[in-house]
Length: 537
Image (tube, rainbow, N blue to C red):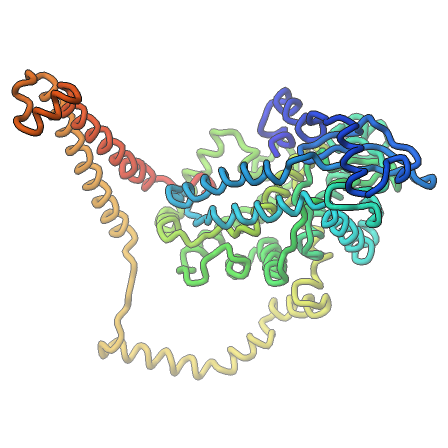
């Protein structure tokens, strides 16, 4: 993932990390032949007309050899030995790490993450990746989605054909489709291919996978993507081991979220986040909507600004200098301080485990896009693509357009229903006000500043208590270490001291002091965080 982020790491680091994409240590051709013969049940010379012992490329899970059969050029992918046992050992360590994170993650960013579920999602996809029969099925489905649903975009996408009759769990035979690695920008330009067009295709294809197909590539790193000059340039996908499905409800929520953001509709955005599991349904939505409305308006203002280097209003926050970022965050805190506190304290946000690889794919493609086009901006590229998603919003393009027009003039069915029920609503409000006057109802309000001060007092008490205990234990240990051995206890204590050493009691006291000092760190950090907000605010 980091090997794609030229905006985060220096070029020399990028070049070293890129080796992991498709240039891992190769295993011998004898082992490759042995695996092929065992899996396919016949000598390599009988299965293929020709077979190259020199691997084309090698990755962490396997390596690819070139072959031919009946005049067709093939790429034969052979899996490394012992991967299942290796996965079992590594995943047991990751499971332990996930359990520790679930227990000790302070969640200062206001998001509630279930690391156990994230681990399970990762484990599921990793074990699928070492079954090449599943990869063959994934490739067929991926190609069919673009061919049948997006013929125009399909001209810019190439999926190598697979040969299921020669594919097993550890051997995959595919069509040989050579290409230039997608990050080798100069070579791509020498072929006469427009790299800016390719960056647009990568963004559109990803949005199509997520929002329309609901079946997306989880691992689009440069080792799995190449480019050729067919049809003026197209992106070749090579690896289909890590693919995942987005449920219909989640996909609908993603579409609603995108439309809500671009329509500057904070309530629609929040509802879409609830539908996709990002926000807890029982959370207090008032402050969340207020915060989301602020960010949506800032997004719209940035999106509408002309794209040029001299206009500071057209920059996303991660494109600003550190000083400009600090200024923006100060202004944001001044405007939304109480709302930030409420949202961060309640932790209404969740990180759905199913989004783990969605986020990873987005980060990889964003890094690739920036190498193809220095002005690459997925959010700007997605704006015109909304026209292609109109039919997904309400299930029908005509209905979506009609509904949007009726919304503007307030004549949607729900608007007419609200107007018809207006007298009932007035009567209900009158009844509520009357019951308030008579004391039958009581208002419950939140004094956020008071809550904040109470929380600070509780943390301060914990900090002072731990610090005083630590200081007392430290002084006790210091005193005991200075006293003669004869004065350090009598009876059993003296016996223990003589057996374990004259400094036993002082060491125990110092240990207690250390433990209490460590316990004071957490309330101290939480107090420091109270006047701050998460970095993403």
